[in-house]
Length: 278
Image (tube, rainbow, N blue to C red; front, side, top):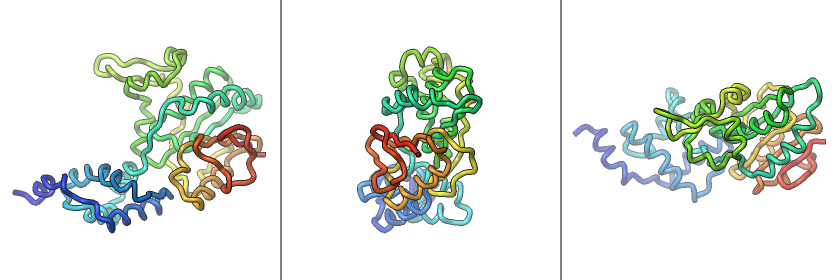
């Protein structure tokens, strides 16, 4: 029997040793600034086990050597994608979208496009939710959305704008009729975001802990439900980078379970999880 077949047959019993978990934990922290507690060990095991199976590897140590080798960059990106992908929904935390509709969008300066950055867009539900509200409120007035994420796999999914039909209840009915198509035939069971919205969003790969991208200033930045994975120093670094691209008078939105207390003292709290840059 080939060695790889033995490896695959024993995959279910492969254990992620503490030393190996520490290696992956330190690697993800260096790359993405994400702090993984010991409670994340089962998640690391389950998400990377499929890659061991794919490559016919005997243990997690061999996989770590593969992704840290000079020719392992593609597989390293795959591992980063698997370990940093987080759950998201359409119109998550609805009060933020009420604020977008009532305060941010009406404040657009005449003659200038209103610009919004979804700074951890995952599979695209957040920027598409923002786009639906922007199109409804601003109509033919100019607006732009940039959506970035660390995971190339999630960005590819976001660009397609194709989601399981089970996501339908997350989207308000009038947005469904105006901006979504129900799949038929081979696409049965799916929901597709209308092309006119897909074309209005610029998706880009960006590591929040890296140098800020060279972009024009934004009127609002959404950084929601991401900082819970960072330690305090990384939070300060990420927020500082993003604020350099937020115009004075612009809004910075974080998740409702997050706060900028002790991270940045220059912003003014407007309502829970919404800050104003003076």
